[in-house]
Length: 103
Image (cartoon, rainbow, N blue to C red; front, side):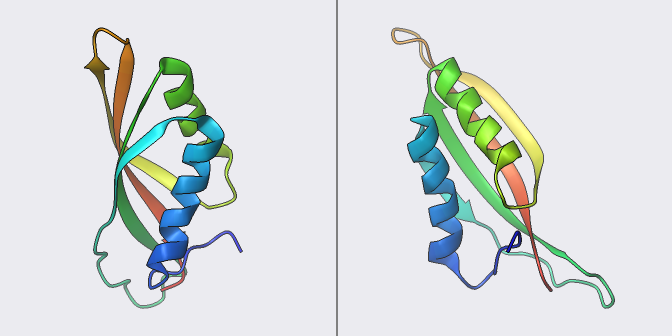
């Protein structure tokens, strides 16, 4: 229940779109990246995603909070904050995350 299925691309994307709706941040880019084969005997396989979230500080942090507290097991690998638009004080957050799956 807490793991993703690598082949269910639409379901995996929908997970992030639900967080977008709750946080009111804008999910501008979302990509499920190819994963390496899991070594034999490993219980879990990381499925990598890259995404870009924009919005106010509150919206972006709310999105991160949803990631951390959501039902899926994940790890944030990399992140980068930038100012998306100086006139509106919006932020952009580029994330690389890994959700866990069965091999």
